[in-house]
Length: 206
Image (cartoon, rainbow, N blue to C red):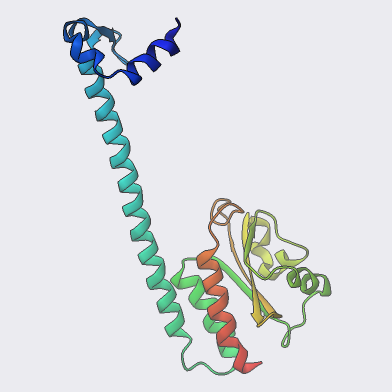
């Protein structure tokens, strides 16, 4: 009989500890941290406390995520309202880039609309392959040049393709010196919402 057999027997026969309560009281095991011996009951209490701490940590993470989510929703609402009543393309470009920078605290924002400023054909072809936002640590093609002298200091980029239906109309790029600000593994939902709001606002002026 090995340890697994003993464990399986005890799991299948919980009445064992009722029939041999004295044996249970005599069992001692090493303390997980101090090294001293403790009773089985004490070890169970320690395990329960550790599980409770882990559960409390998870709950706090969920609460923090909910607060952050609410804050982002408020920012999206504020961004949407800022575009109401803006009609002309030049004004829309300024409002979109300025408010993305201010509302979402993005240090560097650049946008090109193909109708107004045709970009490098390679960039346009590349964006046609992406309907959804994506993040990278190195700028794609020649888009780093959109940020002028700041380009060499930027280490993370979020590319937000702008569309009218499935037709690409331009590209909004967010950038940061912080390598972790935009990264491939981050959630894209709010970036997608920003792209959708900006695209919808731009369509009537194109």
